[in-house]
Amino acid sequence: MLNNAAHNEFDNVVIIQSCDNDFFRFSRDNLAVHSEGFEGASAISSSTSISAPETICLTESSATLRLLLQFMSSRPQPDLSKASFRDLANVSEAAEKYQVYAALPPCKAHMARALPQHPFPVMAYAARHGYMSLANEAAELVVAMPYEAILAKLASLPMDCGVAWVRGSGRAAVLTHKDRSSAEPYNRAAIVNAGC
Image (cartoon, rainbow, N blue to C red; front, top):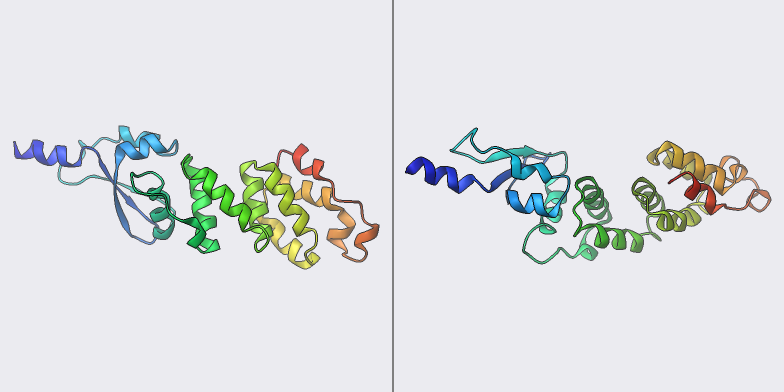
């Protein structure tokens, strides 16, 4: 009977390990229900060890996982307005990666609010995840940045989006920065048509 009790205690639990070696005990069912990225969590066999739950090692930090897991639990959702931009960007990427549906709208909304202070990272996030209107709104702010800053940050965009952005924003303006008024006007359709 003791083996059954130990086995049952861990039947519905997984341990999630962050990249910085923090551990989170979490419901296997919550992972499966609230995320497509963890849909296999309910199928993880706990028969491999009756003395401990299965451990899932992830590439995200403990700060990111702490926020992300709150979106998948019965606790109130985290207040992302109090998160640093770095934490917001990281949890937004993790929510997209694991398809945590409860986190997607608030993450996108808070990334949009961060746009004036962080136009390039917001543009990269929006381009990676298909948020066209947000990507275009960010691109309009990025066009006003010094060209050295633009060139240095273009690597964070998916290649097809970076090329489309350069074409759409006026190649001369981005590459030479000499006379923005004589460059081609910013072309939103170039980004949208590239699927970015």
